[in-house]
Each structure stands twice: as C-alpha cells, then as structure tokens.
Image (tube, rainbow, N blue to C red; front, top):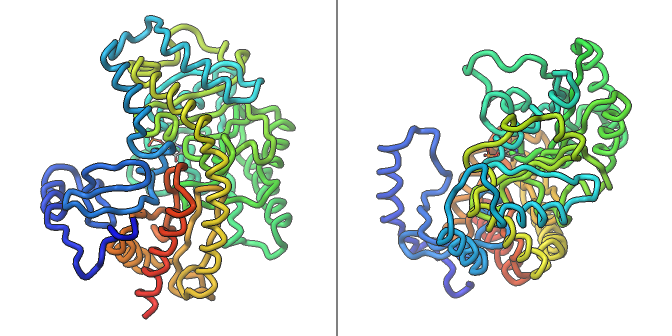
Length: 440
Ligand code: PMP
C-alpha cells in the first residue's frame, strides 16, 4: 500500500470531479461527501477511485463493511443465493431459518427470537412498536444526541435537531434525557459524578413529563452520529438498573456498535448488560442491506401475524449474507482483531493528540475511534473547517475518512475489522502527515 500511496502533488481526480458534478445534477443537495472522491471498487481495507487512485479506508462505508469490502466468501454466498431465489416474502426458506439460527447463536441465551428487516431505521421502528405493544404503554425514553434513523418515529426519539427541524410535529410520548459526554461535561466531578448527574436528570425529566405510561428506553451504547461519544464505564449499567426499577423495557440500538465494532460482538457485553431488545444493522450484511431485531420470545409474542415485518425482511439473499458474515467473523476472529488492532491505533492516535493543536479529543473502543477537531484546545471550539481540510489532506495522502458530530467536526476512525496491524499503522501515519501539513 505504501508504494501506491497517493502523492498530493500528483493526485489526479478528473473523473471523480466529473461524476461529482453530474451527481449534483441528479440527486438533491443532501447527498454529498466531504472529499471529492468517487469510488470505483473496494477490496478488504483498500478503496480504488474512478481515476485509479488507491486509499486505505477508515469509513467501512459508514461502519458497514465489517468483514472487509467485497469479501470473496460473502460475494460468493450472495451470488449463490441470487442464483437460487431473490424473494418469496412470507414463505419459508432454509436460508432464512439458518440466518436466524446463526444470529441467535451469537446473542446471549435470553434473546431467543429475532426478526429481519432491511435498514437500521426500520428495525428501530419495529423495536419501538414492539415495546409499546408488549408493555401496553406508549412513552419512550431517548437521549440528547441520540440517532436511530430518519423515519418519523425514530427521528422523534432521537435527540438531533437536524432530523426534526422543519419536518412538522414529532411523535408524542417521547421523553429525552442528557447523555454523558466526558469531553464536554456539565459537571466537574469526574466520570462517576457525570453518571450521577445524567441519571438524576433522567429521573427529573420523567417525573416532569411522564403521564404514567412508560413503555421503554432506547439507547446507543455510544452516540454514533452525534460524534462517537462514549459514556463513562458504568453508565449503561445504571441505565439498565433505572429501567428495571421503573419496570420499562430496556432496548439497545446496536445498529452501529454491534458486530464486533467495539472489540466485543455486541457493545452491551462490555458491561454484561441484559437488554430486552437489541436492534441490529449495518455490519450485519457487511454491505448487503439487512437489519434485525432480537428479543425474548415473551416480548415478540405481543405481536400477531403480519403486525411486524416487511417486503424484503428475511429475503434469501440477505439471509445468505447474514449467515456468511457471521461465519467469516468467527473464522477470521475479527472481533478479537478489532480489539487488538483498535488498541494499537488508539495508542498511536493519543500520541498524535499530544502534539497536535487541533486534536481536542481522541476516544473510542476497538475499531470505532472519534477524533474531535477543535480550533483551540483550551476553548474546545468545534472546527468544521479544519475537519474538512484534514479529511482532504488525508485523502490526498491515500486515506479515506468521514466526519460526524453535531458540528461535523469528529473524524471517524472506523476501518473494516479485518485491518492488519501494518495497515493500521500505515493509515495512522497517513493521518499524522495530514495533521502535520495542516499544522504548518
Ligand atoms: N441506529 C443507529 C445507531 C445508526 O447509527 C443508524 C445509521 N447511522 C441507524 C439507526 C439508521 O440506520 P439506517 O440508515 O440503515 O436506516
């Protein structure tokens, strides 16, 4: 990869430029990217653009290609399935059953039933419906900065203004509480004090707003779209305890954090949690669109035939992807790899933080690390401008990354979980070069 690194002096992207300008003439302006690169193909951790430039990938296509881009076994499994049968809706197929068996085998024993959908938003919508039906109540607790998708129900539960502003009334019955952000803590009493503050605020919000009809609580193990914000250890345990005390269902949105991303198969395993419902997506098909929901049989039994489901949920091609992705993850020990290689990357990135005036915070777990870019480390003022410059410098140096966060100033370090130590170090060096160029 080093030999083929893109040299910023010679980087040529005329074909990308042409495609980007045609893109602007077709889709609405919401569809855009921070770096002017049109992808042609990708394999493993390497992306090739339409001009033939190669890059190491820190995006996994928004934390999707966990087993690596176009894993040959996944491509073969999906192709075989395509050859047999594309869709049969609610008729049974063996692939669908095998996918369910494989998924449940990778979940704790108490989660003994699942359902298949297509997108993350769809599975979280189903999760909300199920919590309401099971409990017979309707209020859902969500979090400031939470993101569960863009369809109306899940956007209402989420805590990001951009998903709601100007789109009319949100779903009634949502109660939202602050999520702990150690980098921008409202209290100066350390991690335990921050946890206590957030749980107290949750209690206050519920006391002030609940009509006495609490159905459930849904939380991301770390805030993904809001900027890879990791709560202090122990916070999720406290939330689960709170949910049990108030007799409400405890749901975890693992659409982004699941499938090994944090160095455990599920992020909830870091605190030995026992969620009542788990929403799953992204890495589940590692590029093939498929999502799922897991819960106890006693939770699913609240809905009757046809009351959950969708046209493409459980289709045989998606099912083939689910089966093969899990097998690849086991065979290649990708969860362990995420933990070890992620740890090495974190060490190196923390060193970079010390010497960079812009790297305000480096946080994460496994292969999901957020680099919060600020204009001034003392005031912590978010800088979208510097972020975009950094992303472009990195791309010129053969590294593709994207940004998230309410201010778009958190660079995502989220490579495919198959990244090797050499590639991990190579990619962090490419980022270091970008930082140095900016620092000059
Ligand atoms: N939940 C979480 C935690 C997510 O990160 C996302 C997508 N970024 C979603 C739900 C929605 O998934 P989708 O875009 O597939 O609908």
